[in-house]
Length: 511
Image (cartoon, rainbow, N blue to C red):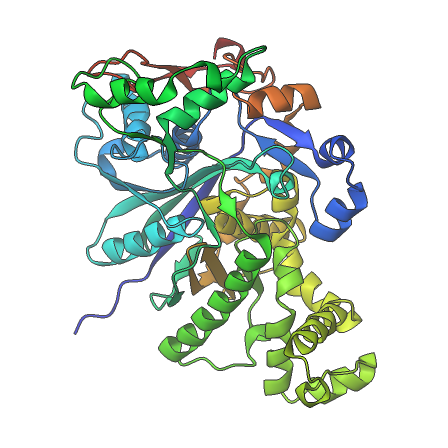
């Protein structure tokens, strides 16, 4: 039997919108102490998509950078697989828009059909869709020599204004080159996985009765009441015709609405995240033959970060289990003067669970745990603190941040492994190991992530809110180098309704 091919990630490219909102500005507008968001959650800045940016443009910009800096002929790219939960259509893959932009861009140099034989598809599973696309593409690349694929994760994390999730918003895309004998990271083919159905975070198709919609519009108008109108008769007329004459005058009794903002339960999704990564870690160990108590053997731990301090805040339970396996637990308890809650001391189970939560928070405040965080978790947090949640791209942004931090700190990672914990609501987790390759610095030196974040344009709150409400038609950024942008969306109710057209601008002023 032939030996398995060594495959992995040869290079990364990160695209972050040129606009950001300082978290202290949002905190002031929401009357929330900045220290609660900065020191408690690790938040500093929020990347904000411009008026003519979407998941397709951000992904296309990331892929374009990846192609240019690796001097790749489009005809050599066998696939572009997109992980996203910000899809632009319920049927047409967002990846086809990416391909359309790239094909137009490279047509003069490589011909109008330069991506004709490139396979594209969207993979959606909340924040883990990009990892699903990566795993699939790694297996594809391993199957035959010289296969080159691109995986890109692109999302705009948007929550309702004033909601508890608003502070964690972010936007951007991460593209990665997948091939055999990669220069940067080889990926172990054994992925640990854990999946359980959950409703911790989702974006449902909301059903709205036409009559309720009309009633709401009437009630919003001054000096009018819904009782002044025969709504039942109007609804009957709207439901009896065959011709589709508009949005309300259509064949369905209900209107189906999709919103970019989710339905979510913050505490529940944290519980689901914790449970799934523990289960996936157990599966990873079973598949790879590794043992509990060995997490300190990795050079770094990478996580999906809905906010910068998510991992450090929730990892204390696994940290505790690691100490127990290594028989270091009692020394840790005594050294830090901790009182471990015992179930037998509490007649009320809820009270016991509360005490356990308080105990785990106490663990995170110990110097031992803080040192663990600084060594294994903190190197991946800094980019998330300045960008926000990237949904499917978050875990990859963390990996890029770890590598660039090691480069800047002159830490040698060659031959060492990092362990990655990915999560997607719904809910699923995957755990996989990546080994850093010799000469990785030459690749990481081209990331320039910190420099890009340093050269963005700051938003004022009023402009942020207009962008959030989709109230601007033109891009705000004036300092950007340009890139792909959404030119228009066909709005007439005919066979081309909803068609999106894109363009490319050399500078922000042209977009």
